[in-house]
Image (cartoon, rainbow, N blue to C red; front, side, top):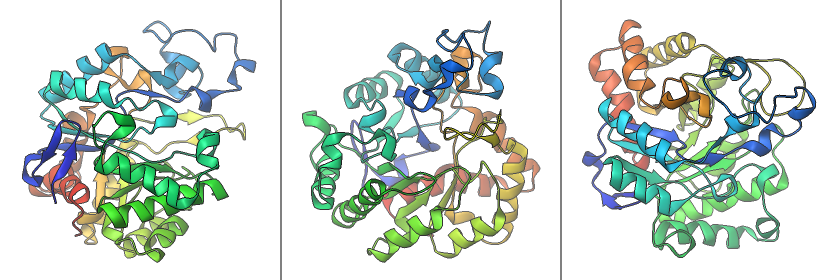
Length: 346
């Protein structure tokens, strides 16, 4: 089937080099809530003079958790296109700032093809309207985004997600998962699932989706590369789903306060690359997606970060240094994103 972008359908072969999970415009300030008690500078704007404050702890400044400038997003996309990337999947949901019209404008202005996500994020972000929906009603809302267009714009989503699940999957989150499954079966689109960074809930979520009839090749379990546990990754891969290494560029160490979604050390990029190399050598290359999941100002080139092109400028050479061939890197950056969006398995 064709891959749906915000400007219309494209053939699978037209996707080119692609980033399968990013955010161009997003507002995650709710996830940083409560931190103002710890530092008087919490509400300062991010700039080069104070970027060091979010280099280790990304939510030390609330402003770091919002990216709302189309001008900045366009600048970053133009730079990304210069790095050779042709397609970006933006999996921002309505609860955290999805803007279909802006995504279309950005695609047309930059020349980068954009695939838009849809669905419902983590329980903490669920609206009263969603909480009152049945699974069938929620699935119908997702299907409308996929088949007709989001919010009356006529701009269609091309992937489901990122569907949000937390450290303990709530009843409301399971409803979002079940609705995603129903919509996927009806519309034939793949599903991105946000999972807790430190637990192993991806196994239960994958089982839930597969148990409801979703082809494993249409499921991607995201965020598996913060706390790298190869036994967990292998169990997921054995189910036939994709796993996504989507925290490249994030080498944080967040103090273990026991609150919030971020706590403890993030794996380093080199550790991610070595783990990917080991999985490729075990024959799982066709089930791996790689990307940055940029959702913080400090990750943008405009704010001193690596930008979206980090995968192509820096990570790809690291993969070659780990012993992967150019053809294998091509599979990771072109073939797999195309297969996932098109709904084809390994």
